[in-house]
Image (cartoon, rainbow, N blue to C red; front, top):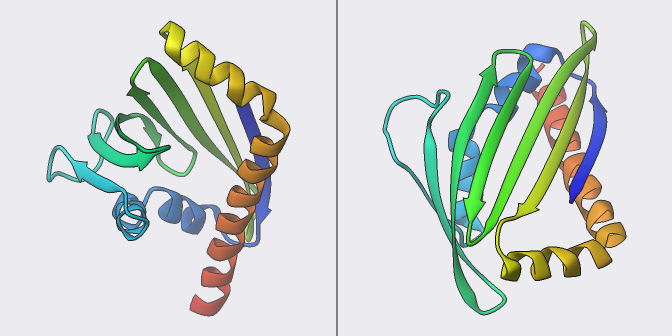
Length: 154
């Protein structure tokens, strides 16, 4: 199952890239939401950096391993994740539309590796319209936050 969206942000490409590649900020945000996140190395994030993520979902403890698969400065990043028979691939691409406007394209693909995961994925596909709407709303909220922060910082 694949979800994708794009948003235009009134901020320069370098600023937007700096925000989407600020992994420490994402770690803090997840911790505030009750998600345990730990990076396996103390070095600055680079291709191969791995995070262990654990959280409760539908009454069960879940564990996810997320690895930074691609990191192209001022252009793109990709995170590959795996958990209990599911694999996920998240890609973020940036395009400079002008000196002060950036297009962000985000895609998320979920694949099942086990029968149990296939059943879960099938139930998610039934709610794909709702999930797509929520996914687009989250990306839009983040884009607006980045844009607002840029305006305040000028």
